[in-house]
Length: 369
Ligand code: IVH
Image (cartoon, rainbow, N blue to C red; front, top):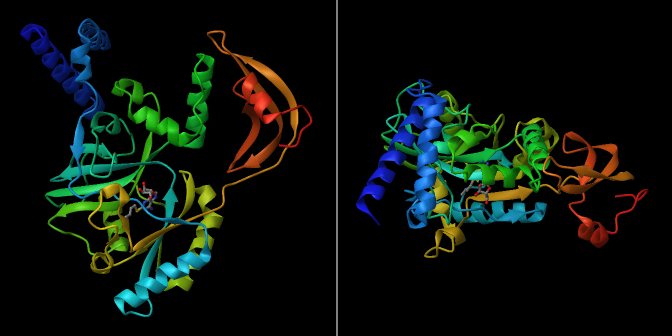
């Protein structure tokens, strides 16, 4: 590759990153939108001429200081009680302290703050390393780039979920369909697609949100229990869960899960279950992981369990099947439904995607669906 263009490319990327920072983070742009667009266009042209340079633009992989593991799911109350029984035996305490939290239906990310400043945002990836999505996460309006209320640790990884509210999901999907594109299946897919966009200006057009609930590596250690972590995150001014339940024993945990199920439809984000975690970090460490010695994505903590709620369902009738015409002329069949309340929203229409899908599902006017 000619030295000139690779140098120019590096310069352009650095300049664009600098202007993104000025625009999104400091809200004091130094150049006009026109000049910014010119830089972006030059970069795009350079990459188009030399695709081998564009490849270098695939997201940078970043290693997590502490691996991001996932949870075992259960839909079964009995399994939840077995989870507790195992821990009671292992830790030799009859009544354990747990925290019950909503299980947020979003996209896991890890934020790193150094000396109180947001320096990095990374997707979970394979649990060991993920994609650097810092520029995109910085566009999230509710997320402070600097922590409030010191003291702060020198280094901390804070874990949470990026999500889209239902109304925002619908708004973007409407635009998407009008432009002749395929609608996204659910807010989670759309949030994932948005985080991967190459242009933070485009990401900023979509109102991503974030909620934080977990701890990765922290130096020096500042909290010693999960309930304490929630309080600390809140004190730093970070977006946190509306509610969590510190409880003693599995009976109280089960009652909290029932209460969560009655409240969760009022939360800002979608929830598909509850997470029960041992409160004290020392006990978490003592309980450890199943699958030790394996890759991070196969590790599962013995100290936490996800209880999933049965998905929301509702029945209604197909009033009509209509054809929607997108801005580019793309035709999409749509089922017009008797309005029905589902997952906190009134559903009146459902995409049938295409003729094959109608045939496959055998949907007809008057059917109960
Ligand atoms: S704790 C070891 N808490 O669900 C604990 N996860 O498989 C790991 N999630 O990867 C996560 N809400 O992406 C935890 N309150 C919550 C959560 C939560 C959603 C996600 C997370 C995790 C997956 C569980």
